[in-house]
Every structure is written in C-alpha cells, then in structure tokens.
Length: 429
Image: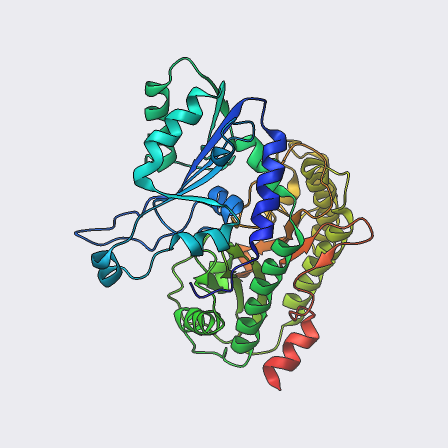
C-alpha cells in the first residue's frame, strides 16, 4: 500500500463501539469486497469494503471479520480470517498479510486462515441467538451485482434458518457518520494532496489546453504524494460542459474566455477529499462571471454557517435554497414573480441550482450517515453550492470539506485558494 496505515487503536475503538450496539448473544460477520472482472482475464483494481476496513484496518481481498462480544469462548469474540498465501501467490500477486502483520494492523489477537472459518463460524453461531449481516443500504446505491456479503447471507440463512437475523448497515451508518480524530487526520491528508494538485494546475491552465491534460496533471500530483489517485471520476468541464453535473468525458479544448469547473479529489488511505473549483481559462474573470462567482461564494459561506449541530440535512437544504433564491433574483436569473408562482416541490431556484448543497464524506465520497436525524459534532460534510447557466455557456460550483463543530466548523480545505482575486493572481503570477 502507498499510504501510511493508521494505528490499530482506532480499529479497536471502532469494534468496541459496534459491540455496544449489538443485542445480547449476537454475532456479526463482515466480508471484504470481491475483485471484479473486466474482460478476458482482466480485473479491476481491488477496493476494500469500507465497513470491514473501518472495523479492522485490513486492506486485502478475501477477508472475513467475525465479532461476537458475548461468546462464552473468549478467543472467538473477535476473529479475523485471511487468505493464506503461498509461494505461487507471492510470485504472481505479491505480498499478503502474515498473521503477525494482520495482528499489528488490526489489533485483533485471533488471526486465522480462511480454511478455519467454517468450523469457528459454526461454533459461534451455535452459541448465538442473533446474527447481524451486512448489506449496502446507501440511499443512492444501485447494486446490480451480487456481492460477497450477499452470497454469504444466502449461505448463512440456509445453514442456520432458525436464528434471528438483524441488519448491520444501520449501525454502521450511525458509527461511520461521526468521525474519530484519526479519520479526520486522514481526510485532512487527502485534502492537502488535493490542494497540491489544484495549485499545480493553476500554473498550467491556459487557452488551448485539453481537459484530459488537466486531469493528467492532477493524477501525477496525487500519485506522487502517495494517493492511489482520484477519489472518484474527475469532472474537468470547460465552458457549457460545466452545466452537465456529472460530465466525466474530459475531452474538450479549454478556450479563451471560458470558465473551467473542476470537481476532483484525492484518495488517501481509503479516505476521500471532494473539492470543486471554477477558474477562468485565460486567468481573468469577466465582470459577469465574477458576479456569479461571488454569488456562489456568498451562498457557500452562509451555508457553512448554517451547517451546525442540531439541524437536519432537510432543514439545512431549505435554508440554503432561500439564500440561493435571493442571489438568483439579484443576478436577474429568476424574478419575484417566478417565486410567487413556483411549484413548492420544485422551487424556482432549482432551474439554476438543481442539486443538494452537502453530503457526508469519509470512506465513501457520498459517505453513509444519518440523513434524517440532527447533525452532530465530528460529522464531515461537503459544502458545494453552484449556479449553472446553459444559455450563458458556463456553470460555477465551489466546494470545500468541513468537520462539524459547535464553535464553528473546521474547514479542511481552508488553505485551498478560492477567493477570485487570489485565483487570478496565482494564474498570472
């Protein structure tokens, strides 16, 4: 792995938090992600299941974590099962965890090879009344392949049909939504690497540069700083392409007079940054571009002040919508008449600002968390208002990542240039 692993103390703490949430006489089983195929004998790069990573720090395929806090066999209360390596695997695939390395990384004493899973699992199940099983229950998930967890659910229920079964996902969402200090440090590292990429391209962008060249500059800077690369498919959108919210083609020429919207973030240690900046291709905003830019920046600042412990995401989005409504009226994009006759389910402002302002951030870019309960301290969110004007050929979005704090949020991207004058100065320095 490229990144510096976190202390096993974090994962021990996370397991203890989970144990407190499980009902008596329960066990929980979590599986790693599969290595997904492409074509022929090709495979995608492995990405660990975030729940098993959160509880163990183990970043390897074919891993299983068993947690049974009340098990009368003390050695079986936490067991980590790993793929046993051999000389052939070492030559063709590289080094895999030894038991000693896994023990040091996870803080779990009982490390077993996968060959020992069936016997231990059957023993612990026989001593348990409930089994917690894991699924992807993200509100926006579109699961079209059968996961390793899903296959295990089928197997488990066939083998132990009379047990009571519980959903692990709601507990994991609650736990993962509130970040530990070590997690915030990893997110800060991802944001710092993202800053290096952004500063690099400020001296690179000019009329005639291709969007994919800018993508390459980011990737170079990310990987050379021990990131695996982009946290998600980067959006490098010049001109009217910025009005396509998930534009990822990144194939066009950046032209004089256009704005360039870049929604990019570095991954570090499986944690993700999520930044958006919009800059002038030629290094100077037009008066109109700057006026819209400053409106978006104003909404962003006010949104950050509203996003605080106690408010719900739904209430927050309504308040930000009213702020954006006022800015769009000032810009002449909507009128008070438009507001008076608007459909309450689709307010007038959504013609130019059609997405939400914030989402949870962490091990997933759109991280799991409690979306219908009050926000609490140490949750991490994006703040990303935007105005998109297809008829004028540009869109502007600005996005930072913040840690929720009662005395004022901690901005993990406070050092990344965002003031329009600073952007111009850096591009022309």
